Length: 285
Image (cartoon, rainbow, N blue to C red; front, side, top):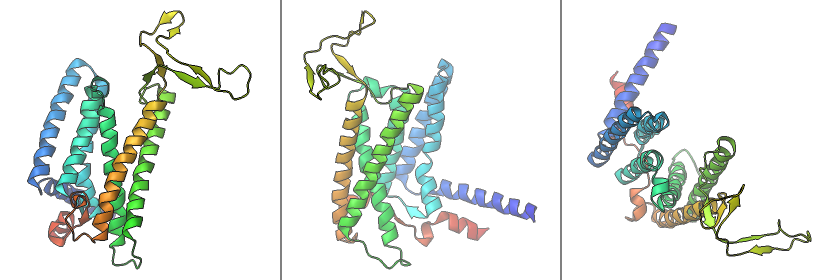
């Protein structure tokens, strides 16, 4: 009995892998992007191993796994991702891990982190909207959600993801001293911590041009903020990305998906029988 169960599990895993491979080849555009990025990641992995940068090599291996996420989700959840959404997710993973972390674009290119956080807000709103949209279209359920509610859920879902990510960055900085919350050079302080009267009076320290620590100048031309400004900026651009998708998602839901809007390229749909490769493979065996 156990042997049969193991055999069934083995066949199920093989069937799932076959379905993922078919899913990868379904759309030529996303297929080309996937394999191009995979080759680039593998080249980067070899280079990092030759340089002895094992932390960067780990990021490369993790990226190789993450690139399969869109196809894995489609097969496992029996949903169809529009090629545009799938390509953006693949490029986002590559931009965040390989370009951002391994090639240090977060430091070398101003606004790289801001761009990705804005895109993350947009994509997270798309995910939240799609989850509720698919649930709302389930024939087994009797409720019908309004377009405004769907848009609001998408927006709140995206902002929640953004906040949780900032919690993660803060935790990594406090525990592992990783500086994920990038510091910002500022030229003025306004704080009650310097008030000698202890009457909650704000003390201004403007025109800061240099900071000396243990007798040594930092050479930054100002005071080094410890990450608050970066966190608020990330949440602000996440807000913008979430608001943009929630707006176009509202009009998509209002037309019940009949009107061709920008959201059409980002909203998943349920798989039809002819595109449910996992179910087909299981039935063939």
